[in-house]
Amino acid sequence: MGVARLSRVTVMLPRGDYQEALTYLSQFEEFHRISTEQGAFDPATEELAVRAVRLFAQTDQAVKSLSLPLSPPMLDVIFRGVSVPETVYEAARWNELLDKAESEARPVVDAVNGAVGRLAQLEKDEQDTRALSEALRSVADLSVDLGMLGQLKRMTGVVAIAEKDTLDELRNSLSDLVFVAQPLRGSQSVVLVAGPAGDAGRIEKVLRTLEVTPIVLPSDLPQNPPEAFRSLVARAEGLSAEKRKAEEEVEKLTAVHSQKLLACRELANV
Image (cartoon, rainbow, N blue to C red; front, side, top):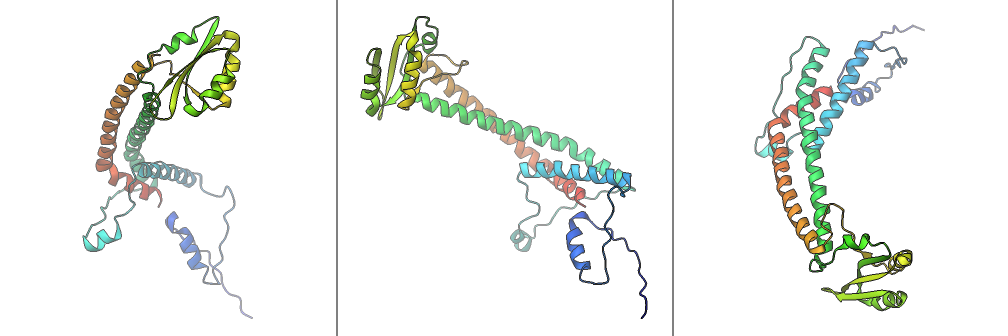
């Protein structure tokens, strides 16, 4: 019985092709993979791998933040002849190649993260502001100083919005206190409940049980509903203008740096 000679072969390939190559080589029964022991990697090579993974993660996140397609749609390539732009990097060593890619990608990634983060915050601020202004729209004509109610020492007072079909039960539950109701548009009414300071807990419990919502204005707004409503409308318009500028900045970054981001992402994945 003859003895077959064995040879040790090292296959070098892009990381993205690893699984496909492993599957292909496993078709040959004579090919046996040798597992590399932990810590057997060359430290310099391992450092390059860590840098490449970090660069890929950063550029990949920026690409996703800008919603960049990784390649043109196939129909555009077939029918419109759209070509994939090519970026060439030249370097004598792997570390030099990564140096170039990192130096190009870093300022772009920082700019994208900053612009996208600002846009997301402005969108949230505008949404929150408009939601609060809509909540106050129904009481925009109610002239009462809510801040003054909160400063009372011996008395407590709450202004709230209640459904009209709960008014009788609410009035009966607090019959020994001052109770004033004023109809609003639709099926709601605004109510004022006032009494001794010691009844604050009871008022709060009754309102919560009947799902009646007290009107609470943020401290940075006027405590008068009409003034607060006007302030919120103006604030929302200002945020909308800022958001449009932020959107233009993101669009500009996309137009100028999309090819560079995609190239650095692909290089880091090799």
